[in-house]
Amino acid sequence: MILFFAENGQEIKNGFLKSQNKAGTSNIYGEEQMALDKWADEVLINGLKKTRLVRYIATEEQPNIIEIDNPRNQFGVVIDPLDGSSLIDVNLAVGTIIGIYPGTVLDKGENMIAAMYILYGPLTTLTFTTGNGVHDFVMGEKGEFYLTAENIRIPDGKIYAPGALRKDYLPAHSKFIESLENDGYKLRFSGSFVADMHQILHKGGVFTYPGIKGKEKGKLRLLFEANPMGRIIAEAGGAISNGKKDILSILPDAIDNITPVYAGSKKEIGLIERYTQELSV
Image (cartoon, rainbow, N blue to C red; front, side, top):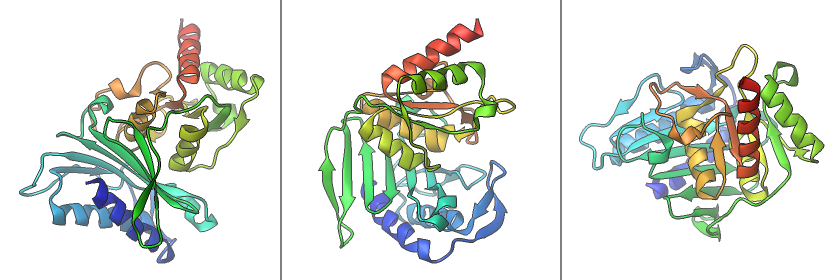
């Protein structure tokens, strides 16, 4: 199945030249869809229907779980077809995020059997885990992928990628960011979750898109963004949290669940959970 997504990833990147316009429709989160979002979604869904590799498909662009007729396997797959698509017109890196479950997609992230993302940057790279380490591949000129890094471990580093506006920070998060800045962390935030997390995976530190004033439940998607990326980060020796507990331990009750996200090295995750506990007493 990893090969399926790798092959279709190249088709999605080739499609960037076709359209960068808005589609005039909204996804399940009420966000206006780009034409490329819908096109990438169709490429992956139609391919999975044709191959019958999985039984269940849930994507960020679809309102309901899709069930495949006569599937060859019982897998459930969650997909963010084109994360960061609004950055394509300014030529910044975007990506595709995938998580694979043994059955239903409404399951805890810790039960995911594989997770991967494809990053479309100066190079097209594929990063995946099947529970036996995290590995990086880069795509060659003929579309084949070559191993570039094996058994990746997230290093100690002082990078932070903070989403949301400072004026909207909640007390624990505000104290957390202040602590990082006082400790000399450098801000590196592109607005592409895949690109920012790829940097954190390789250079250490923390990515965060917190709950904020008026949106305490956060913004990022539990199924399509947090769980697959969290599975990769955890397998590389890091952690992912909603500021209170491990996101991978949360059982979703709907495909559109959202969550605050803190993902990176365990040191930073422990720090935000400590501040949250102290300031909620």
